[in-house]
Length: 191
Image (cartoon, rainbow, N blue to C red; front, side, top):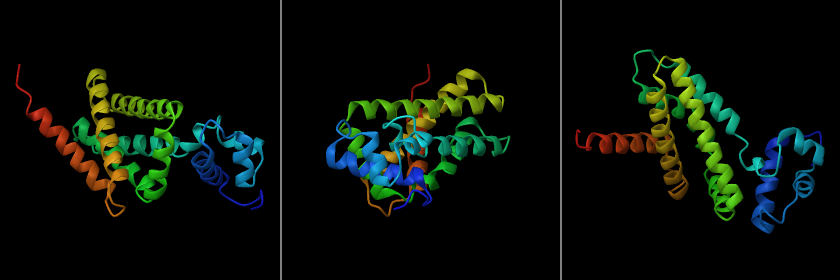
């Protein structure tokens, strides 16, 4: 594969995943990832700041899709419905990569450093959602709580999707998780 071929970031992500599966995260270097992708180390660093980040190539795009959908949501929607509009907009970015998502999760689960990076990514998404809600005029505390609830539903839906059959639809799983969350909140005794 020549250096001039398109999708350098995708090639680097696929090469990293293969190498992490073969050798482990700790025993794989950036130079080896770049070589496997048919690129240079310098090209790697144009796309990713480190070898952890290469497993999370969609993060920025997912954040942008969520923020854009939140901004475009109808003004009369309650905050949780707005957040779900945001996450629903991001579903199509991951809904078609089931096999790769399973492989990626296995690599992440095997390495505490990658687990930490993944948790950081989830926290960053929640923060972006809370900020987008505040920009819509939602009170900060409500924005924080709603963003955290939405992030929990998103994570639960993704875990069910990765664990389940490839034919499962992440949109449907996300709706089910939100329904579960609402049912639990409704079951709380009133103070």
